[in-house]
Every structure is written in C-alpha cells, then in structure tokens.
Image (tube, rainbow, N blue to C red; front, side, top):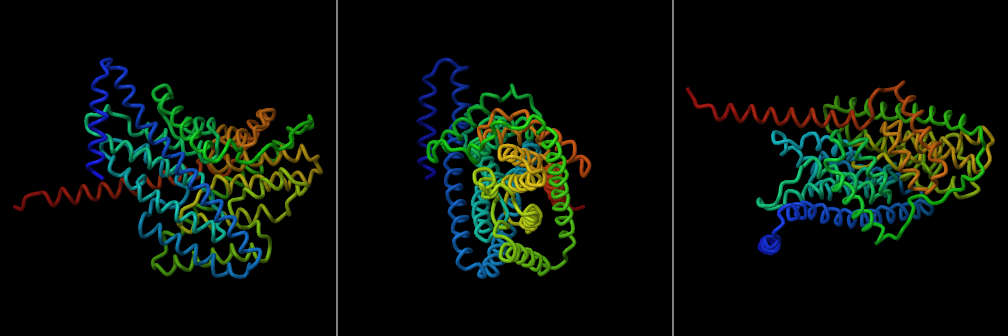
Length: 464
C-alpha cells in the first residue's frame, strides 16, 4: 500500500512539474487536497446517514413488538457505547463540535500533535460505532455533530498525507473547511455550512480561505446529494397565510426555548462536572445503567417519542394533522437528551435540540389555539430558538432550518426567533455548551502536554 502511495505521488509530481505557470501550479496543488477530502466527507456522510436511519427504524420496529426488551437493550447499548469511547478514544465522546473548535485553536506548531487526539481515523471509527449503539438503544442523540468531527478528521488526515514538496496548507483552515463540509453533507444545507464556519469556528477573515471553504461545502454536499438524492432534511411545511400578529407568538416561543436550551446545556455541564468526583469505576457504570433505565422507562411507560433523534416529532407535527404534542413531551425529550449526552458516549445535540424546540413550539401553539399554518411557523421558530439556546449561533440555526424546509418566505421570523432566543439564553449563561466544552478540552490537553514536556526536561538533565 505504501509503495502505491509513493508511485501516485511521483506521478502527480511529474505531471505538475510540466506546468510552467507557478501561481497556477500552486493554486491547483493547494485545491486538490480539499477536493479529495470533500469527496470522502460526502461518502462518509452518506454511509453514516444510511446506517443511522436503518438502526433508528430497526429500533422502532423492535420496540413496537417487544417494548419490554429495551429494559435490557438500552443499558447494554449505553454501556458498550460509553466503554468503547472511554477505552479506545476518549475525545470522541459527545457531539464532536467542541473538539473541532479546540483542534482549530491547537493547530499551531507548539500544540499541533495534540490535534491528533481530537481528529483522527480512530475518532471516525469510534464515533460512528458509539453513536449507532446509542441510537439503537434509544439514546436521544444526533449524527450531525459527529459528522462534523468525522469530516474534520478526514480533512486533517488528508493534510497529513501530503508529501514534503507539496505547497503548505493552513492546518486550521483545513479543519474549518472540513467542519463546514461535514455540516453541509449531514443536513444537505450548503449555506448552513458556510454560516456555521463563519459564526462558530473562525476568527480569521473569511477572505483568506473563502475559496477552499466554498469548494469543500459544494463538493461534499453534491456528493451526498448525488447518492441520497436532492432531499430536504425535513420537507416543505405549509406556512402560507400566516397571521400578521404572529410576531408576538414568535418572540414568546423564542424566549421560552432560549431559556430552556441554555438551562439544558447548563444542567449537562453540571452533571459532567459532578461525574468528575466519581472515585470508583463502578460509580460510572451505575450512572450509565440508571440513565439508560430512565430513558427506557419513559419510552415504555409514557411515550415512545422519548427515544431517538427527534426527527419524527418534527415531521409529524409539521406534516400531519397531529399538530400538537402532549404537555410532557418537551420535558421527557430534554431529560432524555441530558441523560444520553452525559453518559460519556458519542452523540450530537443538533437534531435532539431541533426536536425539543419543535415540541415546545407545538405545545405553545396548542395553548394559543393557532391555525395550522401559524402552528407550523411556531414549530420552525421553536427549532431555531432551542438550538440557538444551546449553541448561541442564531444565524446558523435560522439558515439551517430555512434550508431544511425551503421556506424562504419566513426568513425574517426565523431570524427574529434566533436573535430573541440568543438574548434570552444570556439570562442563564453567557456562553454556549460548545464554548464550555471546548475550554475543558483545551485545559485537559494543554495540561497533559505541559506535564509531559516538564517530565521530559527532567529526564534529559544530566546527573550531577
């Protein structure tokens, strides 16, 4: 295999040596890694989506016939998903977006080796298997955040494989482009990928890497779309003839969802902090088992909607006559999302946050006795608002929901919901879930790096 790679490199080098325009040669060479990584990202995203959907459907089928068996399946899947992460790849836990954010900051000569702990081939394998175990077991997780870490890992690996004579490419820009491509492929939302990179990931002016960013998003998105078809993540909800006074309801939903999303994130962080006080491994097992049994119990005794990513809630409330959820649905969705995330396994919060927001929008609409079209709008605004409360990215959230539904006529309503939610979320916490987790990862990794450096210095000191 190594000889084949060497031969391919030699062929490429010989071909490009024949190009006499140096600027064209450098630009072309710098573009190729983005093309290859984007294509691979699209392929991985498609495979991951199909596996995730298959196991979610399989879980639903099994639950409808043998619901009681999940009192065994859910704990088993939760334990396997957590242990896989803990033993093989600890930094594949959780969403994956905070890891990508941390990797971007660490992509410097001093800390470059630490990035391999956050983005690698091992991360890809563990991330996929752990999330698939969780979703089959009924975990309230999503695949979108994990897809972003997977994409970042692919772009990182392609960058590492470049030979020494290849024109240098910014490591941080490569990771940013990968994350944007991952989001675009996961949701089929190219604009969302670009806005996400600008709003959440980058502190560099976009002009420095706009071509690479757009190229990555387009190629990854087209690859996924070519294999899955030109689909919308959700569909085309009817939002025609909405009421002129609906803005007041939008603000109400935005405030409630913003506070709820931020409070959920704060609770997650508090539980994760509390878990660091566990002195024995058995305590972690007990926590995971109890969490799994609560999730299974809520699904079995209360409502099956306690299980899964939450996409079913979005599609059912938006496209069927079953517009209104029961009053307890938002609560069990939030509880199960907190428990699933804090087990320490892999799994994202994007789709579950959208599902929780949809349920809150639906519930409030039932209280206000709104029409079907107004209800659809509040459901969409709830999705934007709850996701914003967790991530503090109002424009990314609004653009994502806009592209998922192709409802450009309500873009101002979605933007208003995102902005109102972002302000309301500040009442609970000034920072997003991702910012807190990114900071924790940076502290852990830099502390570990400095300790190793100090130990090495002591070893290298000559004996007196």
